[in-house]
Length: 200
Image 1 (spheres, one colour):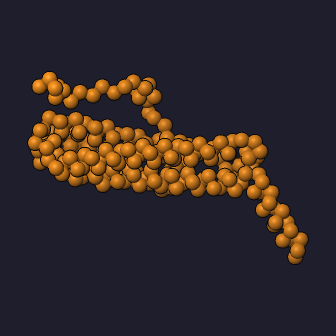
Image 2 (tube, rainbow, N blue to C red):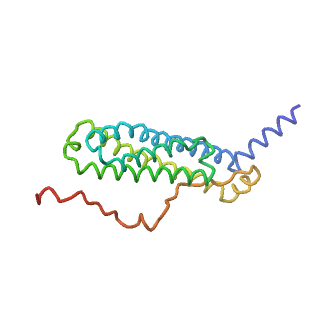
Image 3 (cartoon, rainbow, N blue to C red):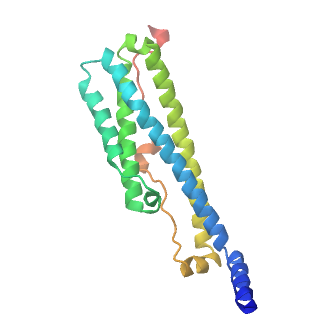
């Protein structure tokens, strides 16, 4: 009996010294960071119906842009979000692509809103716009934290002697967020909301 306890104790000590516990801790940290990413994207999705409804009241003939936003939100909502998504590169890329489409549609919606002074002056629109901007900042921060936690986990899994433990337990590196077109984002975006206030 005491031999079994001694073997179990020896096994536990060897696992803690070979990086197994660090990998488990870092994997859980990455899972928690992923949950926060999903939470912030959901916050953005929840804001969209109110934003679209407010814009509709002023910009009825901008139907195409409003439809694009609604369709992009529906596409994001149709993706089954579960913990496995964060470890499946294809699912993660599909999710990121859908979120990028939604972000692009929202940007077009906000550019369109610049053509409607009454809409820009509407307090509920300004509140929604501020909430959306704050949410975009939270999304960026949540994604950065997720990327950092995946980097820590992947570094542990890939470095010696931890990589031997990872192979023994079939622990693989996790995919990370990527951008669709790195060249496109390396150039500064061109934004033009019309003439500057000073020249009017």
